[in-house]
Image (cartoon, rainbow, N blue to C red):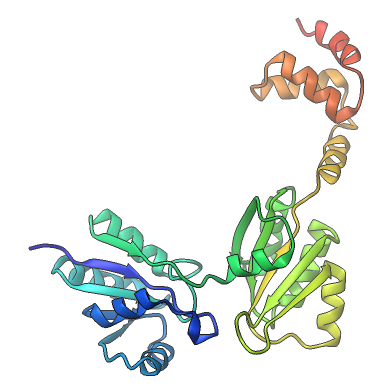
Length: 282
């Protein structure tokens, strides 16, 4: 028996006109639609006059329902996976169903469509050449701060999803750990009251302290600047000698020539001075 196919179908993140003709065709053709919230999806289907069997697939039933969906796919059924809004598989359990399909050699076809993170990045005015999607930060303060500590020296634009009731806590932690960088909040994307709020992180926090935040949000923060990074690197090595600095780099796998160049750059001293210290390491 020929196996079926899983279709990853992005749905509008606000404006219903953003659904593609291809997604509409697939939703009409498949045997089942697996939805994160069937109550939300039925509204979408009714709007486009699509009558199709719905089944729920979400964070709380993904293990059992995921097995059921794989069984249907092995039997030859075609299934469309949709989330409440946007691209399934990003910050939702669709990721695990896709992995299971790949392991079982079941074909997966991803259809292009609305994605809040990319929309917000392009509109942000921040660097789009390199970026890091972080999704939702952990609700636990300790774990949230630990994650921010791990990425604080990333020079790429950072992209987060955030809920309105947590945005102020997140901004406070970002200011504390990342510093007062440029930031952008995109809210109510593609909807009537779409808004992009730009400024420093402190300015964004002040805004939300005076105007209660509303709507699902994308928070974007500029990556660390080269100047800031060099300053931090210099601080790290201020308490050790040039010779110790060289040894650290060489023991880390860097050859001596590159280590001399790196130490000279970070400490802003001449290569000749560093070279004299390196001679004693031979």
